[in-house]
Length: 439
Ligand code: DLL
Image (tube, rainbow, N blue to C red):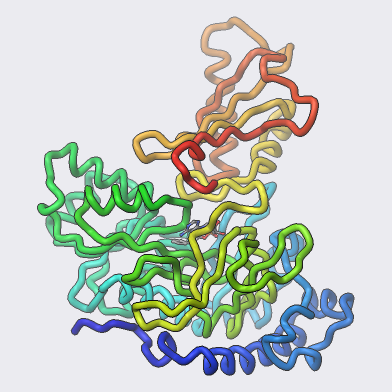
């Protein structure tokens, strides 16, 4: 049966009631964190704030911020709030200079996360009659696991494809009549293009909706994907630290993503000063989890820049809306859906005996991100033995792949050929900006 909401009692709750629930949950979550996580206790003690000072969401500003660096410092167990025996899952994302962010989940945490993804699927028109093809990566990345769990909850027939092997994706899509496609927008565009090349028209597939996120994309790209696949394309946002996809999701209005406010409390701050900005201002998105058990986060700085809105939505949902991320307040790049920091690349170069003279060039060609790194050889490495440089490039590529999880194209260039800068070195040239992508 077609449902409009997965959990209507929460998703359409009057705003004053949402605030009341958030007030109550925040008080509990802060006390829980203070009592169970030494790292937080120390941060709060240092700031002179105790759980008694937090009587509701209006007191949120009193709490210290937490950043990715804190997660790194506390790796792997430092922010765990429960006995490891209560945890049933970890997921992970790449972090700066090799240390990954590892997020832990109890069964309740997984249930909450999957509910959030189920809300997104139902908002995109999903029902138990749908065939949901999940081609986000499965494994440590949260995309596959999150949408997979959500699809089960809705009762869709779930195709756990993971990413890649486009011919097989298309074969299953056609033979098993997939109606919902979940993947990164660039992969959706690539699938669309491949279908077209194979001679399929949009009406030849049974797809009706796509749930696309994990990387920046534009309205132009949305229109393009909708046209080539003959679907409605919905945005979905999330981050591993908070659970994964489903922190926010788009509804039929396609005008921003509803934040699952009964689980995640959102603020926007000035990234320079930390000052909390009024709703409607552009700033860095900060999240506080409200009912997580294993890996709760208080005032976590996402580094994603966006604008929040409390305007009434035509879909009937009352949850706050966020715009697409409009950029980042740090230097993280998202390449083929994978988070990459220049510092990781630099670490590999230095560990492999190169100097920090390099340039990263990212572009999007035929809807796929290209990723090239020019690296200067040292004078002694310069050789004209045939194949020697190609061999070194391959070695460096393997080291990069091991660190980043994706394969850049390495170009060893002659010493002193990368332009030196007198100010801040221009390490990254992201040509995707020309496509209007908010990198
Ligand atoms: O990308 C979780 C996810 C999976 C979201 C599948 C949506 C779909 P991480 O790998 O931890 O988690 O990366 C989180 O990706 O801080 C944003 O910068 C970016 N991001 C996520 N969703 C979107 C989106 C997953 N819809 C980081 N638009 C976040 C733009 C997004 N950027």
